[in-house]
Length: 494
Image 1: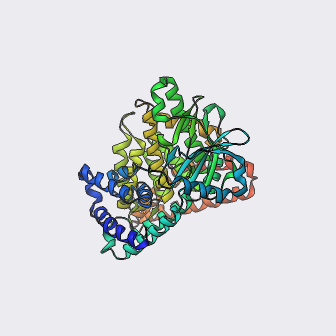
Image 2 (image 1 turned 90 degrees about the horizontal axis):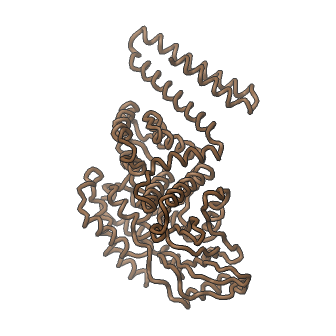
Image 3 (image 1 turned 90 degrees about the vertical axis):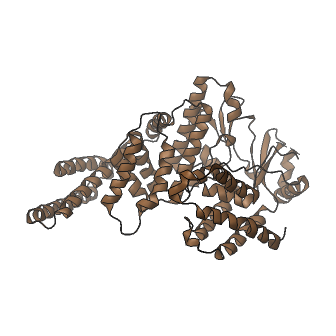
């Protein structure tokens, strides 16, 4: 298909799709008819691989899209007819060259075909059966042309400011993400890192790659015989289902808190139950990484949610995001507290943490808080994880599993002291914030002016004392000094 033909197709079909999305108001998302939601989803699927992946990326953006639309896009079908066998085999031979001699037999019939790649079984000369993931021939060129056409069309769309997300920014984000997914050497590295350090007793397996049979367009890995999770569930006992659900949750938290890795697509199609009854996690193309700071702040957010600590949830959310413009901190705090009170006082079993996080993210623009994009992928992954656990057992409580997993993983990774330290920091910051707000309210009164001066002086002295302690004391004593300093601050604040 020529670029002019494809450009005409996208002009006819993509522009109405963008206009339809643009009309949807964030405040009226609950009234969007189901048939309109299905029509938007179907349009993305009809437009081909680029738009299927674009829709999957947009499904993370609960901050700018109506949640009902974002949820529908997360279920876009990513299964297409396979590419012609001769073209795929020629690509394999060209890419692997002499290394192809290590392959005794290559099955021309794929065991799975998605929008970007398809998977074939092969037998290696040294015995084992392997799985070879191969990018569709010419898919990079198709994606590149589609991105160029998207950028061309967006410049000609009228009144793009009324769309809830910046369309140029959307295409730039998509371009960055799709480049990562089209690099199978990156996926090899992510797969290897994800499999490192997982406790054997959790019974979770990650495929191992064969580097000599891997290129940017080909990923060869160990083949795991098993059933897709949703199809294997009926044969599992209730006890086994709970064990596997707990193992899956612990694995997700372990890799996130240890390495900042988020498997962005933990749905049951990417999870097998093998012949040994173990979990096998597949597909690492959409893996993303979060910085240490975001990991620690997210850890506090999890803790606050699980402990129903509204003050901690508020401070964690505010520190994770970026406060935009000239907003009134007290007004924002009051709105967030009102939102959290509604959720966190619901009984156990009637609260979906991922749904609450999605609603928080969707409200963030109204509150004037910009949420970092990596955190959006984490929220989506948690939502998909909850759905997968529901597939294992509808009666399993995600909040209960998350709490139990959080306790065990933070102990294994020795994060409890760090968690206590971060908790102390947040509590002290909140206490100082409360003092400063109290002082500013009574700034016009003489008696309170004096009190405010003393408070500011006390704060300056305590921070000076804290810095001096860290400078003088050896590194091993820093934690104990911090704990003592916290007590002193709490006493002064009280």
